[in-house]
Length: 171
Image (cartoon, rainbow, N blue to C red; front, side, top):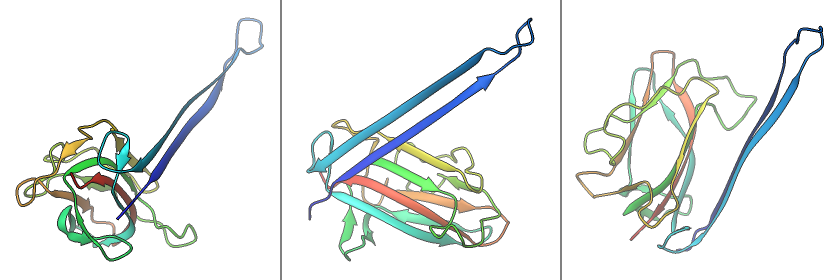
């Protein structure tokens, strides 16, 4: 199966302050990032793309297995060998739906993907986490049965719907 993806993120902002004459200096800045990934298993390529809205109950875990258990939108089993990118958004896809009330935390699963063995900073409601490395090694090697899970843990504020994108390679 072929896959491709594009990632874009921009942060822009400005500051205003008062100077000694009562006027204000102004400062504006922006940081932009964009990447396009073709289909394949080399650097700057992916052949696995998983995107979904998932739910996790209050005070529960959603352990996502990247080696043969997860299925993509077309019903194909996800059997990742390398994790290239992950994005988790702590809010439902439907912006009109009820907002999540609790923080989500990535990491801490049994048999975790390397880099996700301990809990990573909490993702507050309305927040997001993103990590991406398009090089030949990707973010991490996925090893079936010993290093293939990413945990999304929910706090005690009720069931949370979250969005997740996983970009990976099968070899």
